[in-house]
Each structure stands twice: as C-alpha cells, then as structure tokens.
Length: 284
Image (cartoon, rainbow, N blue to C red; front, side, top):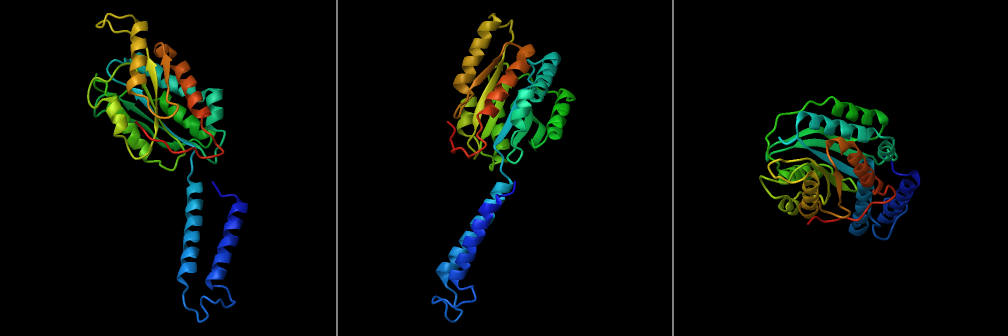
C-alpha cells in the first residue's frame, strides 16, 4: 500500500523546513554561524525523518485483520465429518457474500491462516499467513482445502493447546489492525492446559477468540444431541471465547457446518472497519 501523495508531500515540505532551520540551507542561521552542529534542530530533523520512514513502512505492510482458523480433527471426528468440515470451510470462503467482504479492500487485506488441532502436541498448519488480495489467491486456498487429506491424530481434545498455538500464529503478524482466533470443535477440553488459562497466558498480541460448536451424539453420556449441544455452547461461552465482541456460532451437526461457518465469517469480517485503526485490547 502506498501512502497518499498529498500526505508525503506535506511530510517532505515539513522536513525541508526543519533542515532549513537546522542550518542545512544555504543561508546562515544564528544557531550555526560557523557550521557548528545545532543539537536540538539536528535531533528534531532526525526524529522527523525516522517518523516518516516508519509511517511509510507501516502503511506498506498494513492489514485490516489477521484471522486464523483452527479446525477440530480429534478422534471424535470421523472421515465423513472431516470432509464435511474442510469442504464446509471451502464453500463458506467461496460464498458470494464472504468473497465480497474478503476482497473489498485489497490495499489493506485480510490475512488468513488455517490449522488443524487435536491433542496437546498435535497442531498442524494447513495454510500459513496469506494475504487475500485477489480472487486467484482466494481460489487457491479453497482448492487446497478441498484437496486436503486427513492427518492422523489422537482422540484427545486439547482446546487450551489450540488457543496457545493460535496465539503464537497471531504474534507473527502484529501489524494487523485486528487479530482473531476462530476455533471450531465438537467437544470440551479433556487434556492439557485449560482454555481459560491459555487465554490469560497468551502471546504478545491482544486477540479475540470466537467459537463454532458442532453438535453430535455420544452414547456414553446418555444425553440427547440437543442437550449436548447446549452444554457445549455454554462451555465455549464460559471457557473458550474472549475479547471484545467475542461470540459462539452453533452448527447442529457437521452437515450444518458450512452454513454456520458462513454466518460466522460474515459476522467477523463485517465488523472490521477499513477506514481507521481500532483501539488496542487485552485478553482475560
């Protein structure tokens, strides 16, 4: 992204004026009648130049949102459900409404990364940070998801470890205006650091955690699918999500994943302002 020419012109004019006051202009100045350095004005000129360079560099690498999506691939997710989840995300990204939001401001793009998670030490990066600055890039991500084969992983569900992994990813892109971790899952944390503790001891960049809970059935618990889904939704509300505007979206099952993911992406992307940087936030 290039800085507006009018702004750079004003910076240049101001910098030239500082240099003139500092004595770099051809006319003599009382502060340095004999070409003796003037510490105050020289320092001011240096600071101003550094500010201009930093501002230009920051503008060149801005993104309006960093969004990392974590997909549950623990043992409770069978092969059919895995395919519904990956294809559901691909179809959600390919929906007209989501595409429009992703591509609406290519000069300050959304950065996306995707990972799969299950046990404590089982997080696998599917897509590293990628700027969505054109249809070709988005189509390539969609194609990768549709062609992805399921990795092997443990039966355990380590949501806290997934939060920690996601926060480390978000630390890699501190220049983005907003940072969001998007976790999908069909069960509660049953191993490793609790999600609430992982939130408190996250990385350097403040971020929001949103959840997508997926309904199902568990014969061992002898509860109806509706009851299980209500309990999982409440668990995510109390223990997983965090940050300003955090929310939980609900999919009644993996067949409903595409609809729920589309709805969640629309809510996350529509809430990002493209005209100004939002205020910083903290996690709790």
